[in-house]
Length: 140
Image 1 (cartoon, rainbow, N blue to C red):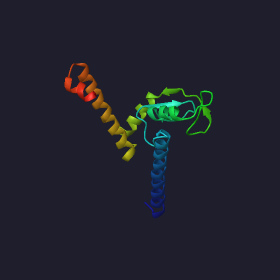
Image 2 (cartoon, one colour):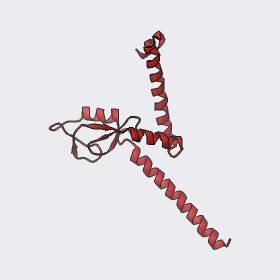
Image 3 (cartoon, helix red, strand yellow):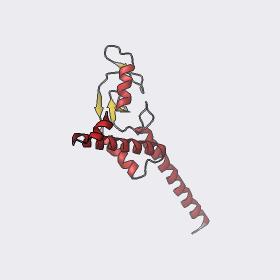
Image 4 (cartoon, helix red, strand yellow):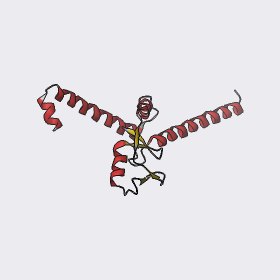
């Protein structure tokens, strides 16, 4: 292969790598809750169309001054209602991107930790429902 062809191939591969990196960053930014700055574990859409962690947007709605039942969107700055809409498909997407190592690092590690904590609590609840006194005590 000539030096010119090799150079062009290396440039193309380099461009593809940086393009993939930009695409990955774009996906991560689209999925991050703008309040918590983390991947949502219980994702919801608000009336502004933005994606949030359920607890974060509910707390925002509860602590923000309302005008005629509306609040200012934390992302877009427009007045919106306080309805939220579950987004289980987003949770499935995040889970898949993490398991396929598309999303890695701190974002993925924090999400995995929350998944582990949720499983532990779910297991305790199941044990408590089955009469396990230790599990009942731990749940409070």
